[in-house]
Image 1 (tube, helix red, strand yellow):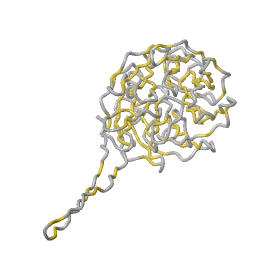
Image 2 (cartoon, helix red, strand yellow; image 1 turned 90 degrees about the vertical axis):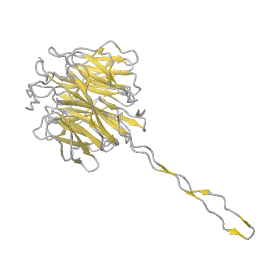
Image 3 (cartoon, helix red, strand yellow; image 1 turned 45 degrees about the vertical axis):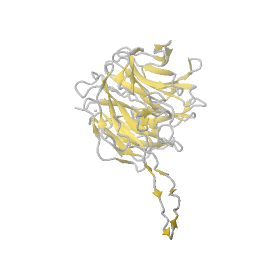
Image 4 (cartoon, helix red, strand yellow; image 1 turned 135 degrees about the horizontal axis):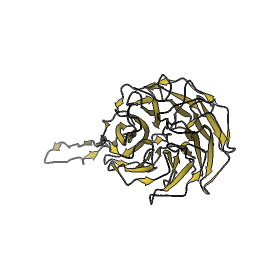
Length: 411
C-alpha cells in the first residue's frame, strides 16, 4: 500500500570553416599571386536527441486518485540536463498509465477513474478527444507499427477482465478480449505478434475479489487467448526482453518471474529485496530494472537477462512507482518524495539533484526530439509496456498500477 503522508533547449550544430589565403610577393616590373585555398570543413558531431519525460500526476497523499494531469519534463540532450517541468496537461481522472507511439508524436494516457484513454499531441502539448475504453483502464501498450493500442481494463470496484484494442488511426475501440481478473499491465513482443497481460486481481482499495497470480498470452493476429501462465502473487508490471522472454513483477511475492515465450512457461522466480511495481528494459537488452515502490527504502534493482539474477539495489527516492530508460540514463518517478530522479546505468549511481513534481508523480514515458527545430525522432518506442529500443532512444517501461491499496498477502 502506498501511503506517503509521490521550448526544448537544443544545441545548434556547429560548423567551423577555416580559410587560408597566400599572397605572392611583387617582383620588378610585375607581380604574381597564389590562388586562395580553403582548408577542409570540420563538422562537430550533433548533440544527442533532447529527451522529454511525460509524467502522470494522480494526486498527492490525501488526494490520491483525484489527479487529472500529465506534466512534461525537459530532460535535455541525452537526458542529462534540461530545463525541467513544463505546464501541466489536463487529462482524465487518475491517469494510471501512459505510452508513447513509436514515432514519438503522440502519448496515450489510461485514465483509470474516467474509463477512457486521452491522446496528447506532443508537438503542441494539447490533449485530444478522449477514447472510451473499458472499466478502470490501468495499463496500455502500443504495437511496434504504431497502429493499435491495447488497454488493460482492471475494473474500479467489481473486477474487470478485458483488454480493449484501440485503432489509433480512427480512435475507435474494438471488441474487448477476455483475460484474467483485474489486469493491470500489458506487454507486446517486439515482433508485434503477441501480448502478455498481468492478471493482477484485487489490489486496489475498493476492489473486491482475489489477488491474482497469472499472466494471459494473446495472439494479436487472431485476438485469441492462450492458457494462463502461473507466476507469483499480484503480478503488477510486465516487460518483453526481445521476442524470447517476458519478465513479470510479482509484487506480493517480492520477485520477478521470467516467461519463456516459445513455451509460455514461467521459469524460477528471481528474488528481490522488496516488492517490485514497475519494470523497464535497458537499451542494450542486457538488464531489466525493477522499481521497488512499496519497500521502505526507495530502490531500483538490476536483473541480468542472461543469468536471471538480481544485482545490488540502487537508492533513488521514496516510493518509486515507474521507471523508463533512455540510453544509459534511467528516469524514475518517485511518488513518496514527489520528484523525478535520474540514475546513470553505466555507473549504477543516482545523479545529483531531481525534478520536483508536487501532486503525485506516478507513471512515466519518454519521447525524443531531434534537431534544432524541435521535431520528434522517428525511431524507438517509449512508455507503456513491452518491446525493445535501440541505444540512445528511450526504451519502453511498464507504467505501474500500484494504486492506493489495502494489501493482504496471500502467498
